[in-house]
Length: 147
Figure 1 (cartoon, rainbow, N blue to C red):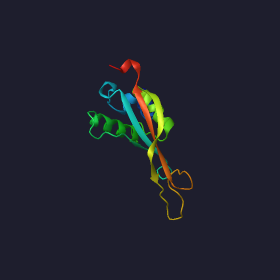
Figure 2: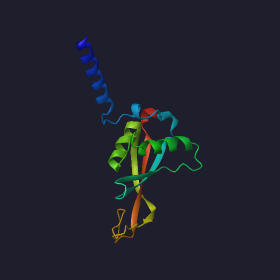
Figure 3: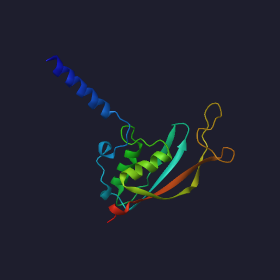
Figure 4: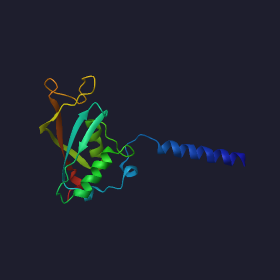
């Protein structure tokens, strides 16, 4: 009887450790289906010191894929799911989801600089604190998912 309890306790511990692993697992993270997404996705990101990561925006206004793009944006930012914190994480997460990187370019808009009470810039800035770049990254479905 004691041995059975010990085995059960060990199994429970092993299963709980497996559940808390930090491995990127899309299957555990969400129920998104690559076939539901458009062939191309453009993700806008902006590094911020304030939040310690990147802000992610996927423009979905008037898109036929509006709900899927919003779901993807939530998945990438959600702390309990993929929780992308930098552009390396973004590249790896999108690859895991079934997309390949195509290109990146700076968005035309330069975000205004935000300063805290001590005068420190809260955003990564360019040219003397004028503002921060937003970067657009283009992703395309991997060949095997195109249809």
